[in-house]
Length: 448
Image 1 (cartoon, rainbow, N blue to C red):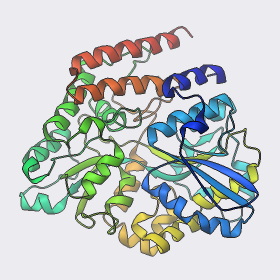
Image 2: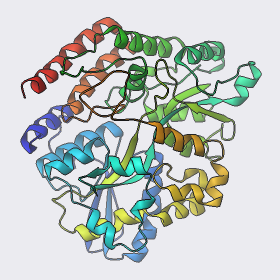
Image 3: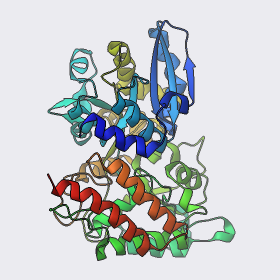
Image 4: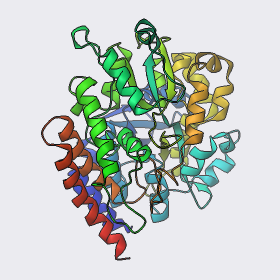
């Protein structure tokens, strides 16, 4: 998509054209060269901000300015800035959704020359599927801070007390049965925590994996929308009913962060979400359930696997003036040594997972990741963005569609789903409206 077209999509999504005035920021250091970093406010990223003084010790002329944003804000505002060539950010936290598209558009700096000349950086150490997802024509245009798939987390102690056994490969019917058995609102215990918050990267992330494994799809091979198909209706109905019957309070406004809090504080028996959640769940200083959690693959219906593939990564917009200074920080935050810094300073459970194979070879991390390390790597390896569902599709992506329009389309559809979770509309009405949105997008591809 051309810059002007995607810029319109992004502006419609965010409703905030002046990015810098909309974001809160914090400056560190007093150097002559200011590098502004737009970063997502997840726990691992907040750790990076806290540790960034270590970078500044070796780069006294660099002043780091962080703009920390929630996931939805980050996606919208970073897209606007990059699409418009505004230059507000020198480094942007993006994902495998944006990277290949923006690289094709010429919006991102090709990082491969910087990678190749940085001694010891070792991009071959990145998990292959993660590296591939951040590459365009064989070169990396962003580098992973952490990588993830999705899996089911469950309280082993509660399952044992209730006489329940988690299968090696659970189905969504299994999950519903477990949630029903363990749901106890009087004891402040939800059977399961599931995202319900609007946002293509919030509620649609787990929900799309359910749609996929149920045999649903957004479009058929001819770009005919299929959000009103029986498979999609069954999948969405099952998800909405599950979270309404046995999910967390206020589910329609709960995203990754809210579920991380609910589960780690002992208020949910299960949580289906990103494998990167272990950095919070297994942190003994922040989690009441550390050491009590079991891990199972993403629940399935009609497929062998259902986990997604995602990575939060760092890229450098083409508008960045001092690309070398920006790369120096990007390299620091995604290097092997950073993993050891986090482990030694903050605790090994807080090391960003899923980006480098060598992370799992560090003895201290191998020890703390016994319960989740293997299943994390297996889930990432089994994710198949090119064949996400049981039928052929014209797009790639498991929990998103790698087309520019999905930023807006996914947001609109997610709002309908969230409204159904809140009880403001029915699933049928939500999908009927979503189908209309998808048909509009599909028609533009049929015309090409």
